[in-house]
Image (cartoon, rainbow, N blue to C red; front, side):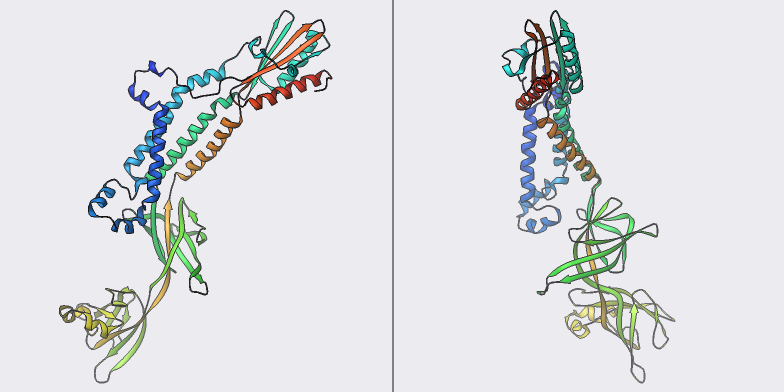
Length: 477
């Protein structure tokens, strides 16, 4: 026999005068919120988010762009209204659970009388059988078997009758609350990640190190608690020139001490101190080494080839002072490679000027005021003329840098959800009664039961119990 299924029946919330409680304790609100979240998720899939939204935004007219921007539709999962929506769903789950918990606890803690006769109404013949022996001996053997299989065993003696009650799976009544808790943990995890996490990027030249990344949303720098160094970057290509694999060998440094080395590949992220690094892109950029030709025009022109590292002072060939490269550009104003030279003479003020690799072409492109400026004259410091021979280029690795402290909470929620769904759908609260009646033909033993769900499982339970009871007395099942 089967009890009414466990339904989240609303308790007498009419007795609660609180309007807010009544609003959040309705299942209708849950359905509405889930529908809204589903629509928002679809919208978030159709509308590019964050860094992918630039191209889409350019195709919108100004009025529509203003609407999308004001509603945070390009970053809806971090918007205030989305967080409020998540908060409302969390509040709805909490209040619904509290509102219905007393009824669930009442079902769990109820102790039916052992001598109930209703479970034995319309009992199938195979669940009753006769055995020989005394009433006490039969009752003791049945009690011992039930004690080994069920909890909360209760017994009652009424004249020539012995009644037994036991149950199992009582905690399955709380499976739905385990599901509710898992959803709450997932929601909390998403909010924790939204408030306390970040999504950033950084480019690191091979051989260099950084301790600051750039936030994608605000484009503000964010200082890390450690330093990352790109020791080596390698890229492999297919025969058609397309990149096959690129790999970054990274070192992580904390307070000046190298504490970890990791290899980062596409789809194989690396995590360090709660921050996850993804291989996103790569490219080439000018390094610190610059090749220059320096012409000194006095009586007889001389040309000197120099390899200089940016930032380091080098003596001029004639000893009149020193110079250094203070800026290196791979492409400045779409006019090619250029370096900014600063000459510090032994006497006088420093002289700064740009030197372009394509000097003659650049001179034709510059407007008249810039041509007259010493800033664009490679011969600004007499008697020298500087020529840029080339720049050392290095690969840089482009990394996506994320921190989401809510991930572990979300994972716990996912595992709890699986456990809760298993308890809810595959376990049931079974209540079992066994009746021993003394008759002229012997002791009649009957087994009956009820369950809050899974009637097939209850039938199997009673079938196994009846078979084992028969086995106690040497009868074949």
